[in-house]
Image (tube, rainbow over all chains, first blue to last red):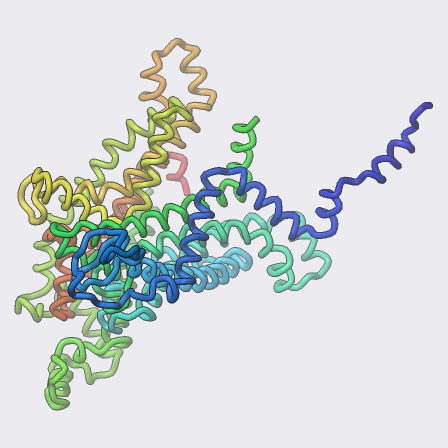
Length: 321
Length: 306
């Protein structure tokens, strides 16, 4: 029997793959699933994502699993990493104790809460502020653009850490003040990137078309620009998260961040410094915690950049072929 | 070219002015200098007297005019801790900071360029993977922790270098290597990617077709053209070091530079010394950025026109 073109078309319509139906019906869900599939296929990114999830989980469950982080035990001071205490298994002392006999493991797990709180808190504020300013500069251009870009240039030239230290000595070191000091210095990169992408999007046909049919500025920004800005913003946010975690460790190390008896990775480094020659575990493990968390985050950031940047994506595809 | 330079210089001056305005706002408007400088048990009368002597009861604008005028003349007041003018104290510390940051940048570039080129020549080889891994590690490690680990291993246990201090090469090695770790990683990556980009271009193929040796092609052609992003990034890395990372490394190794001075000023609640320190580092960073802007045009004549 001869197959006509019409038959083929019918056959095609009948066996529309489930995938394509999903893509048609739930575009956002489909994009998410595709992103996840890509994540699983990229081994480095998968390790990073799983590692970061573990850090999140540990931070979330810290009050139950690491409840002894301020419990002093002078009989146990500076004891080396051990699996058992008095012949009984006790995971709290797995990484040894500090100069007051507090378990290092518990203090590290509690420290992750500070790092994540500061990191996520600061990045969400700087991301929002930077995005708004970047959109204003890129979308309206002209005088607004010049003004905002000049502001960014000037602030980029500030000696960030010293300004943050000056602010903290005047306000007094605390968690909130440290976050405030870190926010002041972190928004410029968001504004710069968002402005750049907005500038090129503004000239795209779909934005021009939207304007021609009379869409308001707000509608263009929210319906047409922002969806295209999500991936660059997300990528920078993840990279900034890593940077802020390192910055928090530095400020707390210098005594201008988290104050004792609370626990933070930077604080543990400066506390352990005096006992370092006798007890290596005091400074070693908090530093490993910082390094690993930042590494996991950077692994995810590298992958995000490669899926969201078309140029990188092309390179990746040609590598696989 | 002259117009461009003048414009840049003008913006640099504005940046310096902005730094001093920010310092003024932080120390006089947001914070209370008297509360910081006097002990907790000081009486209200003593506080009032100090406010009067420092001129803190005047209107903010008057205070700011006085502050700017003094700053212009290089007068930041006397250090409360050492009882001498603050600015010379900071200037005295500059050579140590310069030595440390230039040594670190020198180390980073010295290792990053050959490593990056080798990695670019053999993409996805063992060396390339080792370089990416090393770069990532350098970028992820906290410099205060790295410094402490170096002290523990190389100074305390092996005794090769000194734990802290200033003077000889034995003092310099550990802080310089610590400071170099992050820039080394980032510069290696940029060298790799920019050389890789250049190697794929037509002029490289043409140079090879003309029968030039591989060495000439890479060193004379590809690397030379890849220099712009490398130099730019290096300058930017240096300004990052000065703006923050040296402070941490100087504190870890007791290196007597401007960063350690700032921390000492903070510990002794010496506000005027801290102000002078922030101002000097601010000027340094701005000057460095100006220099980087100028090298753009020098390395790439196309940019000079704009």
